[in-house]
Amino acid sequence: DSGAGELSGDWNIPRAGRWILGRGPKRVVIKQGEYGALLIEPGRSFHIPAFPLEEVFDPTGAGDAFAGGFMGYLARSNVIDTAHMRRAMVYGATMGSYSVSGFGVRRFEGVGTADVEGRVQQFIDLTQVPQAAPAPWLAAATRTTGGTSAERGGARAAPARGGRGAPSRRPAA
Image (cartoon, rainbow, N blue to C red; front, side, top):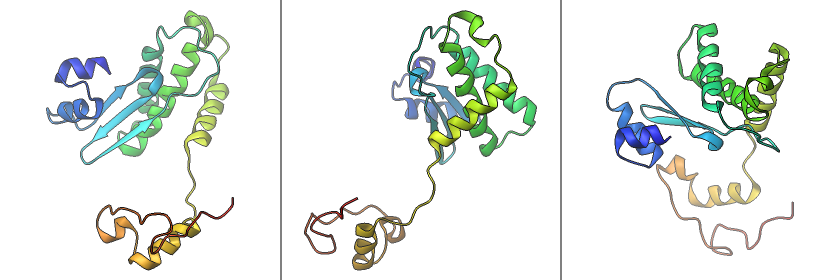
């Protein structure tokens, strides 16, 4: 991320990425160390967190491991589109997580395809949020306001607690 800031002169990472995108590339991926990585494309962006580990031993080489997992996935799939770029970021973050969990390249000794695929699946399970029905208090607010903010074309402040269209308190979980 410091490279994007230095290149653009802007230390706000999303703005720096958009600045770089405006210079010609179709997509920009910015590694953010322990904070994950950001993919910026025209009109949208995607953030992947770092794989959560209880202990980090040595961050040296984590960026290189991310790049290896990322580029290795893209080379193997031979497709460069949004879905594959996002999946490649998961492989990059997975390889970065192996890198920081030990010292030097020894941490990769004994790590096989099944290990990597298992951790990729853990990563997907951690980051996937299934579609759910709206919360009851949101559904009530939608009925009284004529739709969700997105359906009305923009953000709108929610009514104050106890105000019209909002329950006086949230239902017990």
